[in-house]
Length: 400
Image (cartoon, rainbow, N blue to C red; front, top):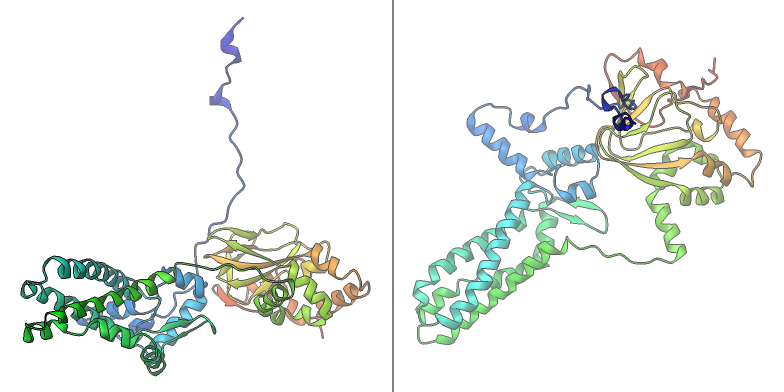
């Protein structure tokens, strides 16, 4: 028996057919450079000014930028608001702030280690050490000044405050006094009054710097709490209020149905080049772009448009059984999308048997429900669309 005959021949094995994947290559025209508009010169000094200004605006790579602003549209708006209203302020989510907090952390650790050592072992040799101590005090004095020019994120209103008067008022009513006590030039008092040896103990005020370390590290922690069902329902209504206010179809539903649908909505995260839907597949859900940007392609891979925060598609998929997508939708960046399936939607309508037929008539009678590909020939280049975008294969009745 030939044992070699039992060994599989990998050279003739058929290749695995992989499903083609659409990768987003943006064809949108570049957006206006606001930094170049504010400082239009091309001299080395102007380039340096633009670079320094770019370090003070919201950084797209800052973790809190991605957490609080989430989408490219929201980040662009925040940068525009910053540059147009208070360009000299420092954004709390800027790269400058990250670098400065890192430097301050190193200085705080050095000061907290050096001060007790000095008091314990070099108490009578303060002349050799006070210059270094003054240098650290100067750095912390700069930190106090920078606090007056740094905006802050209000966790209650979810707004970023950059108004210098509000920022200064908050800091003065907060830790300004504590920070000033920790940077008082006590070394001069020690030198002037050598006999008053106990003045050196005032250096212990520098322990107050640990407050800055706690402030910088506090943002790393998150608290999770349990809510009762009623509070949780209110939280869901608040979270999805934009979805319910934007999708016109929900305006025809009773409040009990809306409340039930809120619990059925899923929040899904899509990474760049992830496909939300594919052309020619059956539509079975409504997709609402909560944050981020998605690109729409026709069945031959041509980019048609971008959908940003607040846009949605698939409204007819909730009402019709035989709908198919006529375009593919691909995430252009990290996106959060709210998804409501047709099964959950129609289950919520079970107590109202005639409501589904009424909603179908209302949806098909809208003139703005023209399929997107019928509008594509009117577009010279990809554009940004908002509101309800129809990528359904179902053609609606046109009004004369």
